[in-house]
Structures are given as C-alpha cells and as structure tokens.
Image (cartoon, rainbow, N blue to C red; front, side, top):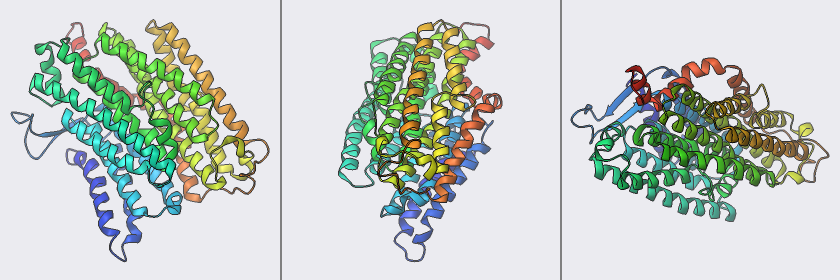
Length: 509
C-alpha cells in the first residue's frame, strides 16, 4: 500500500505534463482527453482502495529519524482518506462532464493539463505531513485554479481571476508567515513534531498566537469564510462549469476547511480560543451566505453564495467540536466532527451536481438568469431531474444526504449546549429551502422564457456525469452507517488523535 500513496500525486501531475507534450505532436493530440479521464479514474480507484489503510511514506528514501525535518512525509490517515475519496470522486465526474462541455472552448489540452495539475496538488495537500509541503501544494492548486477561472478569456472571467489571484496571494502570504513562525519556534516543519514541541515553547505565548492568527486568517480566506469571501462570488460563476464544480466541491475544502481543521486539531491543538474563532467564522458565514443567496437571480452566483453558507455549517461543527473536546467530552466532540465531515462530503456531491446542472442549463439556454429560463423540466428532463435532486439535498429534504448531515450537526450542537446555534442552523436550512424553491419555480417550472423556448437536453455524457452525482446524493444518506464506520469515523478519530489517546490512558485530554 505504501507504493500507492505517492501515485495519487504522481499520476495526475505526470499526466498533466504528458498532455502538454502530446498536444504538440500530430496524431496523438486527440487522445489527451482520454489520458486525462484515465488518470483521474485511476486516482479514484486508488483512493477507494486505500480505505481502511493507515500508512506513512517518506519520499526519497529517508526514514522518520533523524531526517524527519528534511524528508517529505506523506500521511494517509482517516481524514486524508476521506478527502482523497471526495476530491477524486468529484474530479472524475467533472472531467467526464467536461468532455462535451469544453468543446466550445479552444485549447482543450490546456484545460486538461491544468485540471490534472489542480487535482494532483489537492491530493498532495491532504497527504502532506509537514507544513511547508502543505503550503507548496496549496500554491500549485491555487495557481492552476487562477488560470482555470479565467479560461474563457472574456472580461468577466479575467476580472474574476485577477481578484481571485490577488486575494489568494494575500492568503498565501499569511499562511507562509504562520509556517515561518512555527518553524522558528520549534525548528521543525513536520506537523506531528511541531505539535509535540509547541507546549515546551509556550502554546499560548504571543508568538504562537501570532502564528495561529496568520494561519487561520490565510486558510479562512482560502475557504471563503465571511468576511474573507470577496473572491468567491465572482470566481465560481465565471469559471467553466466543471471548474465551478471543482472549486466549490473540493478546492475550498482541501485548501481551506481541511487545512484549517488539520492545523487547529493536529498542530495547534483544539484550544478554546481557536474553537471560538471557528464558531464565529462558521455562524457568520452560514447567515451572511444564505441571505446573499436568497436575493440572487444569477443561478451560478446563487450557488456560489450557498457554498459560503454550507461551508459555514462545516466550520461551525468543527469549532463546537474543538470547544467540547477542549473541555474533555470526547463523545459529543466526535458527534460534532462526524456531522461536520459528513456534511463536507455531502456538500461536495450536491454542490458539484448543482454547478454541473447550471452549466448544462447555461450552455443550452445561453443565460444564467433564472427569470429568463422557465419550463426546463419539459425541455431538459434529465438535467432538471438532477438539478432537483441537488436542490433537495442542499435544502436538507429527506431522504437525501444533506438532510442527515444537517440533522446530525443540529443534534450535536444541541447536545453540546449550544441551543442558539442549533436554532440558527435550522433557520439557515429553512432559508436555503426558500432559495431553491425560487430556482424550481423560475428555472424548471412555469412558462418557457425567451432563452429557454428552444432549449434541448444536454449531451449524453454530461447527463451521465450529473446522474452519477445524483445517485451519490441519495445513496450517501441511506448508507450513512457504513460510511461512518469506514470513512467519517476514522476521519474524526484522526482529528481527535491525542484526545483519544489520553482517554485510553485514563487521563484528561
């Protein structure tokens, strides 16, 4: 199994560079798309194969001691496995969808290379065992995503990409400052070593708190948490639909929420001051995101604001989990983390589905404005069905996956004694439902608008990709128990590692 872990990074990066070379050779440039699909599907198979396997790999032949500071360590624990499955599932569906969708763009090989570069880098982010390589992979994924947001080269796309680049660079600078401070204090970059040495240098000292502020601020920007969200409402609607699905479905999770959780729980430690910050970021993002979404008539911009709101659920659950864990209640903390991580996976499925559906609708109607659509359920039945499944899932309607993860989060918040936060989560869920009733009314039902009167169903492969995610939205909710055992439970345990060890030894966490 150790040999498989580096391949999750090597295969997509190698395929990306191979596609660039193949694009300049006659006779083989036509198969670049097939190579991209094969590479992503191979990654998905490897990610699923690694379920249940904990492994550490030291790339380059050096072992854990005494060269741990110099070596590149890849860690495949429960949380990494969950993220690998999530990233490569969404990537596989998106690259299949892109085969038909991207035909209207020139330079398809360039899209495929950038797509694989971003996918491989996200895999590197979740496998990185040290802070510096985490930063490096964050930057590789970010650079590829900047180019993909502006891929259409129209004024709107280029403006959104430039804003994303500027704010992303600011976030990266803060992350690098935080990493530098921790390295200067501990002499280590390996996450486990930094966590081990921080108590000796003063875990609540001003230098550590400054590093924590820099890291959490930079990663909150990557996750588009309010008030660091200004780049997302422009970047997600402007990007091609498969990239919108990747940005919302996995990039803000891998580069933002995952890294934030890893740093807070496994490096800094889930102290009350960090938990309070996560709770505030999550609660504010939930409310602000959903209110901004309700007033939107641009379909993709509405979905972008819901990404902010739904990620607020995840960060709120992580924050309350950290707070409860700091007070010693491992069971309720585990429930909070289960709900948050379950919703992270569910959001990747239903939000990617909604962005792919919106892309198909925009391609067939030529508009993103809900008031110019109408009657699409009769003209695009498969796309409309998939859009309905995504809408019901994000709104938290049973038996779809979003209902179960939101319910678990609300119950966990109530058990943790945060009744007002549980009430807030219920209110945001109702507002989300109201927002998507508007989508159903104006886009899928009613009389056909001027742009939708001649719309036809999207190409078959686009429908197949969307239908695959619709199935995930249904099955993930019904298979919650086995998923908890094999994916979400081990992921939560990876975050609570030190606390669980303390409980096993009979001491306070």
